[in-house]
Amino acid sequence: MLRTTQWGLSLIACLLLTGCNDYLAPTDSLEIAAKGIHAGAFSSQADYAIVGSIHHGGSLWQIDSKERLYNWNHKADEATTIISADFSPDGKLAITADPYTLVMWETTSGEATRYWTAPGEILDAKLGPNGRLALLGLSDHSAVLFDIQKGGIKRTLPHGNRVRSVDISDNGRWALTGSEDYHARFWDLSNGKQLFDIKHDDDVQLVTLSNDGSHALSVSKYDAALVWDTKTGEVLGKIPLRAEKLKRGLQFTSAAFSANNEYLLTGRPDQIVQLWRVETLTLVNQWEVPKRDAWKPTGASIVAVGFGQQEWTYLAMSSNGFIHHLKL
Image 1 (cartoon, rainbow, N blue to C red):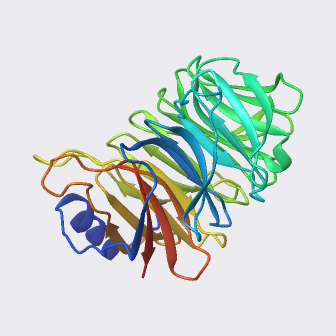
Image 2: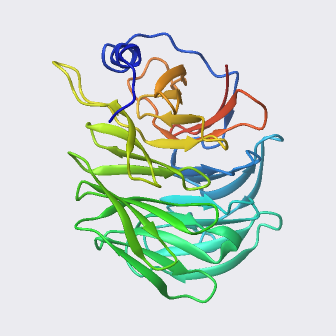
C-alpha cells in the first residue's frame, strides 16, 4: 500500500506536471568541461568528482579547491568516452568505464591499478568496497559481478533485455539492477539469488540503492519512480512521471539517498534537482541549474547528484559542464 499523502500527491502533481516554477538557484558553480560531459560521479564524502568530458575524456576533481587533479583516460594521448564512473564507499578508489574497457584508479596518487577488457558492452558500472568487485550492467541482457582484482565473472544476474542501470550496497552484499525488460531486481550477491522483482510499465532507466541497501529507487521512462523496502519488497511510495494531456512525461537521470535514508535527491534532464522526504515522498525543495547560454534552447541534464559535507548542502553535475553547489 502506498503511503504518499493526498496533500503530497497534489503537491507533486503541481510541481512535476503543471510546471510550477518555484526554484532555488545554485549558490556557486564550477566549470569542469567547456563542451559538456557524458557522465560523472561524486564521492560519498563529497570531496571528489569524476568527470567524463566530451572533448577531454576522464578526470578527477577536488571539489573544495576547485582543482582538476588528474587526467584519467584509458589510453595515452587519447580522450576516452567515459560512459560511467563510480567511487568505492571510502573514496580511496574509483572506476571509469567506456563501453568496452574498465579501469580502476587510486584517488590519492591518481595512478591506474587495474585495466580490463569488459565481458560485454558496458552500460553502467558501480564499484564495491575495497575495490575488489565491480557490478556491470551490460547490453547482453545481464548484469555481472566482475572481479576487478583478478579478472573474471563471479556472478551473472540475468534480465530479459539490456541492463541500463545498476547499484551495489556499501558492504558489497546487495545489488539492484534495472533493465529495458521493465523490471528492477534486488539480489543477494553472496549467493546470486534474486530476492525481489519490481515490475514497471516501461524501460527501467535508473536504479539507486541507499548506502546500507535497505532502500531502493527504481525509475522507468515516463512512467513512475518507486521507492521500496528491500527487506520486504514493499513499495513505500511512488512519484508519478507519466505524460498528461499535452505535456511530455518526465524522467530522473540521477539520484542519491542521504546517509540516514531520510532524504532522496534526484536530478532530471531539464536542469531540475529535487529533494524528497523518503518517508512520505513529499517534495522538500527544488533547484534549477542555469543553461550555458540563456538565449539558446539547449538545456542541461543532471548526470550526478550528491549530499554535501555540511547539513542542507548538495551537489549536482550538469551535462553542460558544471558542478553546482546547492543549499536550502
